[in-house]
Image (cartoon, rainbow, N blue to C red; front, side, top):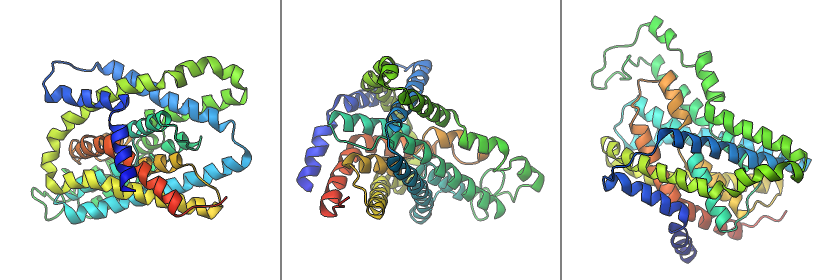
Length: 367
């Protein structure tokens, strides 16, 4: 297994996808006077979400009723897996760091969600190495994004009931100024219609689900209808993903400046926790596979591991601005983007491929 792991790491570290990430990462470090245009980054993000949805919806249209029911069951498993991972992240962070309760809860929410950037990178790696995966996995990206938002909302609602002040400090923490007035607490209701709307209809989730629906309806009409659009949404996917990773490398390097505030324990968490959460995800996937008697391709395990081991940097920050602005806006992003994203797209994905390969060989399931 160790030999296979080293082969996977060395084989994947120098793929064009990651070379673009390294190039972007080097730009701030070398102080190259270059800023990635915000509008282009937004356009790339829009394209990738719609393209993932389109291809996933197109593949969904070809599933039998049995495969579709299998997918629905797997979505349920994914939802509760990430819900549990978010709560576990909170427990671990409370034990190993000295962060404020509110910052710990916010970071736990980030890790209970998933990362579209990590997912699309994993898709690119699996496609480049011809590793098969279930066609419905892009739908899992949408489903497994939501639990982290709920984890953060629930944990911070609990902290407010316990007397958190208007600045996010708890009794016993430096700067605590007493519980906020009840009227103020009501005006910042954590489960307001605005917050819940942002959880379930945030732009990223809407574009992804919209792409799935359009791809599904188009796919039902056959390849003659989808062929022209596949040129944009499938054939060009890898090249546009390279540009996206260039920008992500720059952003990840910038975020590393803020990680020092969390200290060594948070740094270790950002690098080591993804391995734990990804392994939990693969074990949950294997248990579901055993329960229904279906054999999943290795790539399905890898993508589920990525969805379990990644951390949000789009959906949960958007919720944070509305629902719990008391939490630090930089610490969670420094951990999720500066550390976990960088780790996952470089070393994590090859490790997950090796673990998934070993798991399916050591504990085979005969369908």
